[in-house]
Image (cartoon, rainbow, N blue to C red):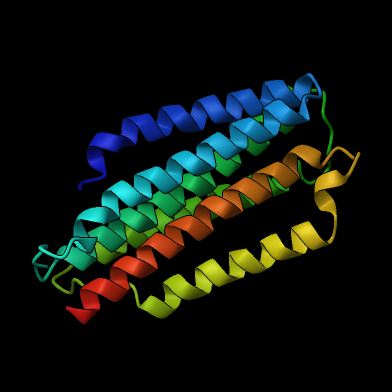
Length: 195
């Protein structure tokens, strides 16, 4: 399935989630902040599943460019997830009274990663060479983010009373979204390369 018809709903979900998280942070509602982050993360998993599912069907006969196009879509989904993280950082730490000295830095880093991924998608589409990213890249991305999630949880960062508590929800649920996108992308790569 093409990602194009879903882009508007992803952008709306991104803005609603970032806005809801900012409101939750402004009112010191951890539950609302976490729910808005969770909702976006779950939505991104559903979108990734819908985009990749046609390639998982037994009766699907893969075309030579199928994996290439699906992996470009998955990379765009990852870029949109990092863009959501940037929007959430900037909304929370720029529009509310919640203070954390690193909010703008992490927001800027997320925006740069998102931009880098979009440039990569564009570069993938240039020229006649239509090679999807290697499976190892998908696996390494997912494992790196999973490692960060394990650290976040084991270090007890989610229970902090400091001003970085909303950031930790961005890290947690943004990380879960990225890991799920990488997982779905890896399954797609595995199945299409086998056939």
